[in-house]
Length: 160
Ligand code: MG
Image 1: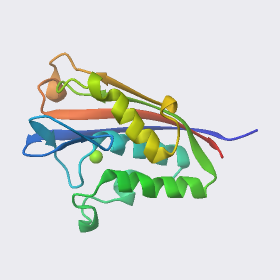
Image 2: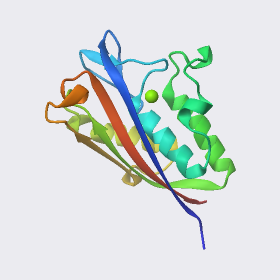
Image 3: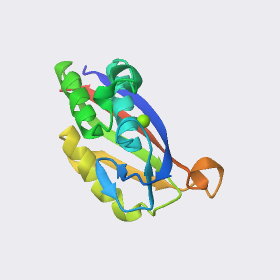
Image 4: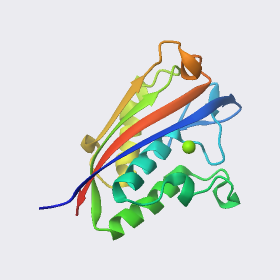
C-alpha cells in the first residue's frame, strides 16, 4: 500500500503601509503589505510548513531562519521550490492542498483562482488539486481590523 502523509501549516504576518502584498507568489494591489524578514508571503509560508510537516522534515523557521541574512527579502517561491526538491528526493508528491486565507481586506475572491494557479505551478500539479478559500474575521481581532493576515494549509503527500 502506498504512503499517505498529511501535513498542517499556519502562519501570521502583520500588515504595514509601504510593503507590497504578496499572497501565494502573486502580488496583489492593496494599500498595505505583509511585513517580515522575507517577502512575508503568509500563504506560501503556511503551505511550506504543511509540506514539511507531512514530509517529516524540520519546520520553516528551522530551515530558513529569519536571523539569516540570506533570507532577507527572500522570494518565498524559491523557498517552496527548495522544499519541493527535498520532498521529491523522498519519493513523495503532493496529492492535494487545501488552504484558507484569513484576511479582512482586500477582497480576495477575484484572486483565489490566480493564487491557486500560482501555487499549483510551483508544486508542479494541476490547479484542480489546489483549493484556495478566503475568510474575513467579521471585524474581530488583529485580522479583523486589517492589521494582520493569516493562512491555514492542509496538504496530502503520496508516493510518487
Ligand atoms: Mg511567515
